[in-house]
Image (cartoon, rainbow, N blue to C red; front, side, top):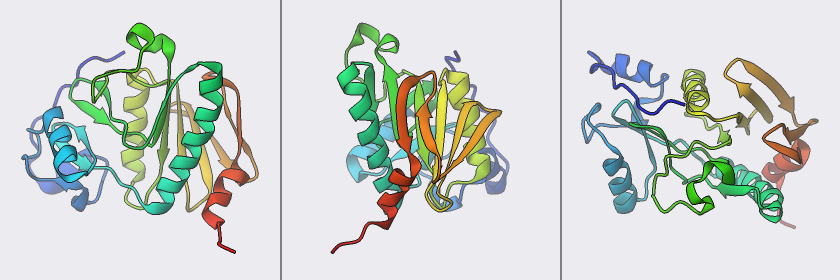
Length: 219
């Protein structure tokens, strides 16, 4: 499991910076503090002051992309995971503002995570605002501002840090990409059932039920 991240030399151009980050839109990159100089203290200070969520990548603050529909799906996934995990006392489930230090200098904010008790020091809820505990499962709900290159980079980072399973949920395509490694992918549609694999044996979520959240109407 990686424990430190070597921050590369400052890019020569804005285009080079955005490319390193996975081609993210420029509006998601914060310029103060200057790219390459940001720290976890900046992540926490901005969240406390502005209630905005930024990931820390290569000393750069990158705003978390999220919309209302994405937040709805994240909430549904979290509810299903908690309903399975808590009665069985398997570990902890966190939501879309749960910051995780994957390695020194790298903070990611998945939309949902499961961390088994075996990974948690003392088997107690972490007190640190950014715990250095890679989850067993990381869930990302794709927004319009997420790019394929960005998600490929995240996948590499997650598995390098010790994550065992990643779900990439696309609300527009109504698909779920299931990764047991950066190169081992299974694509599920709304007609399929998502399961927890070896990370959460016995967990199942019919995707028609999950994506029906997007079609809710008042009577």
